[in-house]
Every structure is written in structure tokens, then in C-alpha cells.
Length: 467
Image (cartoon, rainbow, N blue to C red; front, side, top):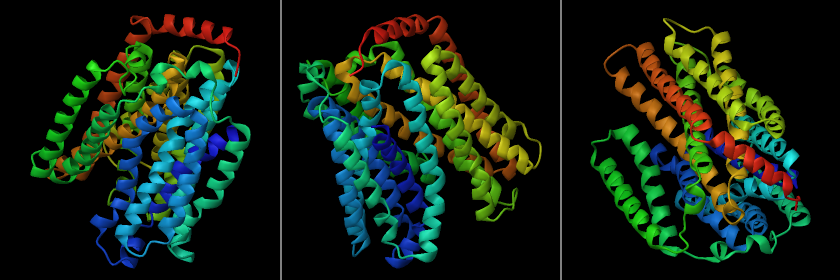
């Protein structure tokens, strides 16, 4: 079971890295500009983010296993079709198919672990998923560079097909298609199509507005249209969901402080780390660092390497002890990682940059796995798929917010001052966000009753038999 689930976690992050590094080559082959070819990546991420809650809800309704396993087949089909594309428009269309498949297994993998793994192994399993995410992020760019140099561009997509098919075979063989009658509640069977459409539209407007704001500013016409669209669809979604007997969003679960607070913490964690991961390559390859891209890429591997070590360790520890203390430790590491470049008065040696990346990876490992376990531990069984989709959504949203915030602050400061000061300003804002998040987490743990909820959920979990 874990092999099939972990292969999906690896694939979903591996494919982004493989294609990202090859965008200039794709632009040259299809004779198009970089702005359009960038949609090969942007559109893929947008579709995944918009579909994650929908696929999670579909898993609650039709069976988590059915949606998860079918996702591998859809992903493989999209990969084959993308490799056969004759022009960039066709390529973009088939990337949508590939993204839909990825959303299907991303939205349901954590829910499957929560449902099938015994209590004493859930944290370790979630840690293994974090490790596979890190390995995919680490190996994707290297594989993309190698394919671009030695093979033709269709192999950027065909490389995923064997792994996706093997994962599908393992999933259909070892993971049941449906989870049993106890999850087939009226809430799971209910269909709120209007809520799904409004939510997808709202997420799409937000995801399109972030890069528009970073590139053109918040006052540009395009950005204002996206902001207006997000506000209109968001307000309509709230009004719609309040009137529904069984809403699209899992409102019952979101009213639980441990679930809603954990989702916000997940978004903050990915915002902080992605801000770091987006800005440091500019530092390393720019006039301050002066490294060639290959050397900069080698330095950047400190982050996924640390995450690969910390994720399973934190998962095992969260099986034995309260998750809250490890989440606090994770954000302390992230704050330290952001504080070093924020306080630097001059050029940072490579050793310090490697430390910053390793501390961020270690912090993410200790924050993400225990937090995911914490959220799923408190989620009602009938909403486990929908909340699993929201966990993946907050991850993608946090990454987008972090990239836009970091680049936006740096660009604004760079226009009127030295480059070093621009970097310091961006990382300084990250430090303040981390401190605020840490304060909120501590308050929730010690004054919001989450430590009591965690203990009660642990006792309930211990009384349940593994499926």
C-alpha cells in the first residue's frame, strides 16, 4: 500500500521539476514565447489546486481508493497524450488531463493513510510521504536537465508513464476501491455542484491573481479583475454553503479548531519555505553569489536532503508523543533559517546558505508530518477525503503565496535600493510571518484547547481497530 501511495507523492513533485527546467527548450521547439510556454507549468499547478477539494469530496462520495487508483491511469494517459502534442495549444490541453490525474491521487493519498494505517504507524507513514515529496523535488530538475540535453522533449512526459502504471497496478492490487459502509454517509453521497463550481472559480482567480500582482502590481487592470473575481465568487460561495444542508466544503470539520488551525499552519509553513526556495537561487546565481546554475542547484539540494531525513523521524516521534511540540520545533527551525539572511550585513558564505536550506528542510519535516497527522486525527470519518484535498490545497496555495510575496517585496525594494537590502527585506517579512504563526500555534496549543483535543482524539483512535 505505502509503495503505491508514495509513488504518487513522488510523481506529483517530480513532474513539476522535470518540466520547469526544460521550459526554454520547449519554447524553442514550439516556436513560442516564454510567457505562453510558462503555462505548461502554471496551468498544470492551477488545475491541480482547483481540483484538489473536488477530488477529495469525490473520494468521500465514490470511494477514496477508486479515485486514487484511477488518478494514476488518467495521469499516465495525459502524459502519453502530452508527448504526442503537435503544437503548444494541444500540449497545454493534455497537461490539463495530466493535472486532473495528479489531483486525484494527491487529494486522496493522506486520507488513505489515515483510514488504513494503524494508529502506531500513521505518523511514520506520513513521514515517508514527506520523504518521497522531497525526493521528487530533488530529482526532478536533475532529470529534466539530463533529458533536455540527451533526449527529445517528449521524454519529459513519457518518463512518468512506467511509474504511473506500476503504481496503478500496486494500488488496485493492495488498496480496496471503497472503504466500507461506515464512510458511505449521506454527507459523503451529497452533491453540491454549485459550491464546487464557485470554489473552483474562486481558487482559479486567486491563483491567477498572485503571479499577475507579482509581475504587474496590485493596481494593474488584470490584477484588479482577478481580485474582483475572487471576491465575488468567494462571497457567493460563503452564501451558498451556508444555505446547503450538505455543503461542498466540509464545514463540520472546518469548525473543529484543530482542523482549521492545522490547515492555516500548513499554508504558513509552505509559504515560508517556498519564499526561501524561490529567492535563494536568485541570490546564488546573481551578482551576490556568482555561482553557475549547476553549482547553485547542488547547494539547493540541502533542503530536500534535510526534509528527507526529518520527515520520517518526525513522523515516528509523533506516533509516540504529542504532535504539537514537534510543530513548534519545526517553526522555530524555519524562523532561524529566515533570520540568517534577514540579519546578514554582507555576503553569506556557502556554508551558511547550506545551513539555511538545511534548517528550513528540517523545520518543514518537523512541521508538516506531525501537522498532517494532527489534522486527520481530528477529522470526522465522512469528511476525511475532503479534508485531505484541503491539506494538499493549502500546500499549493502556500507555495504560490510565498513565491509571490518574496518576489514582490524583493522587486519593489530592488527598484529603489541595493540588491542585498531587497533580499534582507523579503526575508525579514518572512521572519515576522513565522513569529506570528509560531505565536498563534502556541496560543492554540495551550489556550485554545488543542492539546486536550489531541489527547482525546488519540484515545478515540486507540480504541478503533485498524481497517
